[in-house]
Length: 89
Image 1: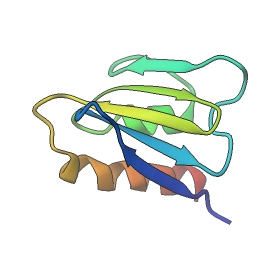
Image 2: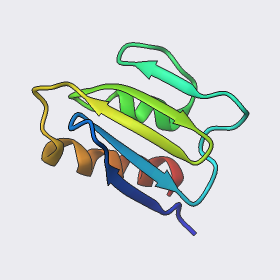
Image 3: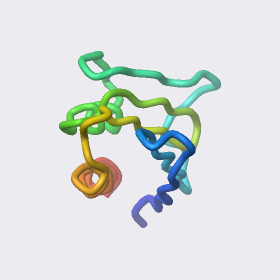
């Protein structure tokens, strides 16, 4: 069964929070990465490769994705959803 995601808007118009039904970031510490950072985490890499994404913050079963101010969510959100499908099938 594929991972289930639920995308929520946040008070910050440049960020969205994505909750999942599975742990996507292992361990007790959070993961915070900016565009250009190197990581071996497949989802983090896929999200940071999306044009217009500035940074991500994840822990356990959620990730917050932040875009650059001039990027548009209608362009980015479908790519974020596709990244989850590619990584978690």
